[in-house]
Amino acid sequence: MNRFIQFVCLVFAFSFCKTQNDPLPEVANIVGKWLLVESAYTRNDSTITEQVPGKDAHTIAFRYDGVLLDRDGQRSCCGPSSYFLNGILFEVKTNEVLPGKCAAVSCLACPRWELVQQGDSLTITACQDVRLRYIRQ
Image (cartoon, rainbow, N blue to C red; front, top):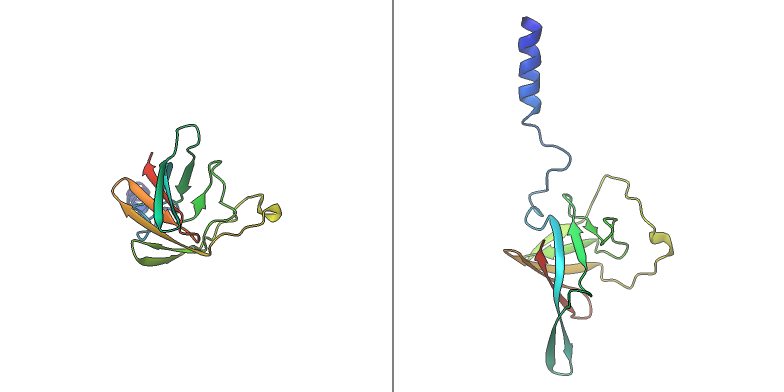
C-alpha cells in the first residue's frame, strides 16, 4: 500500500512539471501556423499593399521555443537569429539538433526581424521594408 501511495504521489507531482514542448512565455502568443495573406512594400514615396492569392499563399510556423519553421515543418534556413516581438527583443536559441538542408542555401536575410502580433494577425517586417501579414491557421 505504501508503494502505491508513493507511486500516486510521483505521478501527481510529474503531472505538474513543464514539458519540453510547452511554449516559452515570451513567444507563446505566436506559436503555431500562420498563413500569408498580404504583402506591402514601398516604391518611391508610395506604399503598395497587395493581397496574396490563395494559390501563392504559404504558411510558416513558430515552434514552442520561437524557432521559425518553413512550410515543410523544417527550421527555416534564412530565419532570424533574433526578433522584436511587439517591441521586446527575443533571441532565438534551441537545445535541439535541427535537421535541415541549409548548407547549400545562401541567405541574404536580415539577422533581426520585427514582428507585431495583434490577435490572430501577425505582421513581419524584414530588411527591405517588405511587410508580410499573416493570419493564424
